[in-house]
Amino acid sequence: MIEATNLSKRYGDVVAVDRVSFRIERGEVVGFLGPNGAGKTTTMRMLTGFLPPTDGTAAILGHDIFEEPREARRAVGYLPETPPLYPEMTVTSYVDYAARIHDVPRSERKGKVDRALERCGLADVSRRVIGTLSKGYRQRVGLAQAIVHDPPVLILDEPTVGLDPLQIVEIRGLIADLAGGDGDARHTVILSTHILPEVEAICRRVVMINEGRKTIDAPLAELTAGGKRLEELFAQQAASDAASAAAAKASE
Amino acid sequence: MRHVPTVAWRELRSLFVSPVAYGVMSLFAVLTGLFFILYVSAFVEWVARLTQFQEMERLAATNVNDDLVAPFYQMLDTVLLILVPGITMGLFTAEKQNGTQELLLTSPLTIWDVVLGKFAAAAAFVALLVAMVAAYPGLLFLYGGAEGGPEIGKTLAGHLGVLLVGWTYVAIGTFASSLTRSQVVSFLMAFVLLLFLQLLPAISDLGVLGGGSALGETLRWVATGVHFQPMLGGLVDTQDLVYFAVIIGSFLLLTKASVESVRWR
Image 1 (cartoon, chains in turn orange, red):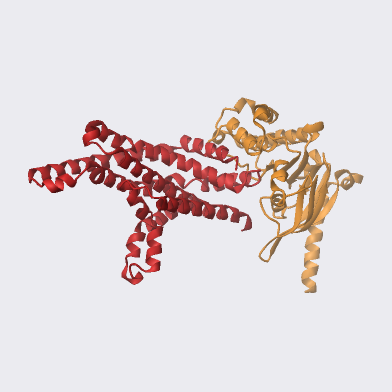
Image 2 (cartoon, chains in turn green, blue; image 1 turned 120 degrees about the vertical axis):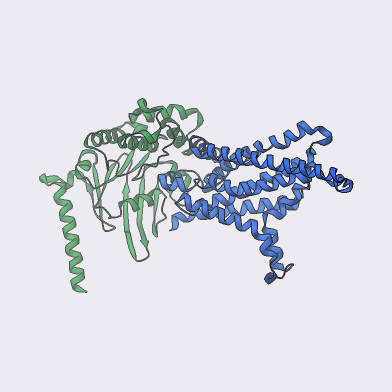
């Protein structure tokens, strides 16, 4: 479903992402974890075709993101770190625009827009201008934009960052719903975050990256087996990286 | 490229919910209205003076097209030079500020969909402005009739000229807005580019370039005014139409390259 092979991104001498590979199957909900600046956003931008990788490839549903961009992009719903909204548009016209540019056929458009609005709890504010909405609602509008064309793959970059606790619970519930649907409604989800309870609440598999490199790729159940907590693992990981960095420095 | 209308339509709607569209239209109406009054009274005074001094030859050579409509249209060139950068300054800069660039570039839209859609929206708005201007020669025709009013053919040729000049400026403004994140910088860059384009004939006449040299001639060819002028006289030459097509096409190509390069930075 989603396949990343040796994805790398370098900016001059700085290596942002270093040979990251993973394979995600249909219906999986994967938490993409790592401290700030680990390369999560860069990896997601490469998966969505926004940034070209320096090395390596990515494919969505078997379509290479640069060889067959149209097919690959049609299959992806993407919510970037800051929801890409036009503040002067109304909620409905914005989601309708997102449906149009994602090639939703005219005959299905109205139905899909209404459904996306309803699923994201936006029916009541559908005629409001986006610029007047609260941050939580804007995040929902961003999410509605990502799911309106029923993409098999959802890529969500820190969907709950900057929200208040109540909004966080709501958005998480929404994502869990999207991931838990049946048949066509079921999405494959990659969700980046540095909030661990979020992963425990929604995801079934964890891919952790640190300093651009993949460090862990395992089912959540396996990681937390024997009562281990994700926090400990996370801290351990960061500490071992620091230790190896120190060791590398010492050997120089 | 089938999504060009989708992008253009959204752009136009956003333009019309912002104060920019109305501001530009009002400013345009006021400026052209004032200039029209000035040009008409100058023309009337000129004819009155020629009549008073019995300068029959010069009076016979004077007509509404060449001595009123053409100079008025010529002046519109300068009005567009100031207003078009205001129309185009937000085209790409707003996408960068909103973060919607990421939406566009990760959607199945092609870069041509985006570039042509935005150009088409701004071009349609300029076409609306230019259509407003038709009211002025319309008034002259209304009062002058077939005898004293402007010739329709000549006027239409001039009108087409103004439209093409406007679209050329839109293409340049679109390119400027793709280069920066700031609307102010986008406006200034477009303005400076357009000013340079207007000054080209003067530059090409400079002694250093040895007026008539290959370089001088090339610079002259690039100048918009050189191709606009004959249309004011009623002459629509294929060569001039080709010029407008080439300049508009080149700047749209540059815009595409610039939008694409965002990915490689």
